[in-house]
Image (cartoon, rainbow, N blue to C red; front, top):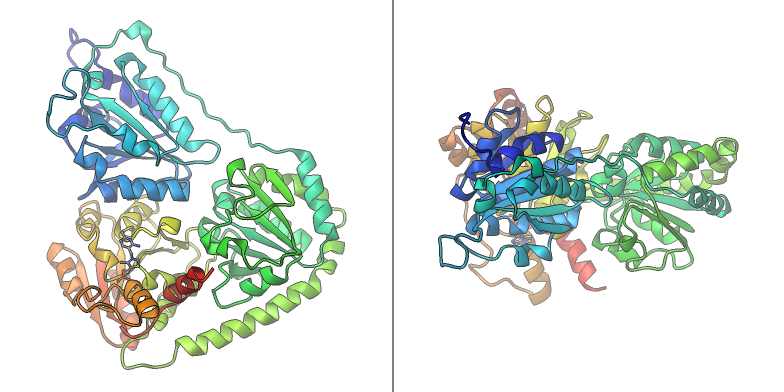
Length: 563
Ligand SMILES: Cc1ncc(C[n+]2csc(CCOP(=O)(O)OP(=O)(O)O)c2C)c(N)n1
């Protein structure tokens, strides 16, 4: 800026962003938001340009989920904004901390049938945790602080901030700027809740812990492991909670999804005490419908609104999971041995059932067919991605369910998917942001052939930004889960509606500048994975799988429909 130039609204942005801890801005450029890009030009903040705003918003959403700090997506007004809607709903469902910033027409130009003019706030209002419009240049820092505080505190979630052109370009009266910034670090907890929880545990014979995403967001992993070890209570994990206590831990039995082979179904039908830690009662636990009706339930959540959804809760605890577990740990140390003894038989029964059920399911999924069995592909990928810090991004219908079912989680982020909104197309954007913030870790995108199509050009983003991904396509040449559900409900699928052909995805990736490998035999899967990771560039492994197999996701959804 020249000396005689007046400070404009956008000149206040970089300081406010840096105070809020912004590292990256994801987006597609557009004239209404160029001033925001210029504002960060000479700062450490990096602008990551994608090929579609949906992908940029998925990158910000997954960044938010993985780091716990708000991801930022910056889009132009009108179509740039509307392209983010699916990702924003996904963020609402995953409670992802993120801030969507869009340009807008201001008082000078709005409502004149100008380019891309529309009312954005009414559309986004029902989706986000809160929406803001900044109407005065001097107030930009205040609004940025508000947006980030709202997104990142309490129950995290997506926030919308509209910065109209007139405000970005408006002259600032410097003495009126209110440069505020607050970071909240305290964690809500009532010690009496911990006392009551321990009393219920002591009265139980067959308790079970189900740890969800809230456990990950509150960074309660070490406390959870220590609590489980001291009390001897068996644990299961779900969603972002997967791996927070390793599946390989003797007291952890993997995913709590009841349809997954193992003892998770039995654990909840037989438990006399269910402890939900940062875990909403939703589709993934079949809304709690199969819990032992006589079981006592404790639900711990940072958001009171979630406690008691779908089921009455005997001990509702409004608290941060980490803070609560710390408090419980203070109470447990003297009589821990006694508790471990108390639950030993229960844990032994679960272990036996778990082994039996997993063995039975394994022999079923590996039965040879003339094509590669999708279950076998998932097992081979899981076995290959065996390092504690390996990341698998799962996308697709049955493809996603096969890899979720097979995945052994030794640490958080061993698997990440779109979660409850079930929005296809997250694979490549989630993969790119996972690699961006974990450059030294292996990142593999596991996707259906339908799902890869939604954001296919993000292959180019990963190559341009040097974020090498290994992309495994479970290619059954159709919208598999949809065709299965049609088949199960109507006894046939309408020809031409679910088949998607067999374009050479691996060659398309090569044409964009990556590497491509076609795999038609099971024995070629592992060498392809080795080559792909050794190449150091984004590689597509296009695996031809059996179109006749009905996956676990299709079966589980059909069961849920019956409820
Ligand atoms: C954005 C979006 N559009 C449509 C759907 C509905 N849908 C659910 S699963 C599925 C099929 C996915 O096919 P593919 O990615 O090839 O995986 P597959 O089930 O064949 O393994 C579809 C279309 C959805 N979940 N999300």
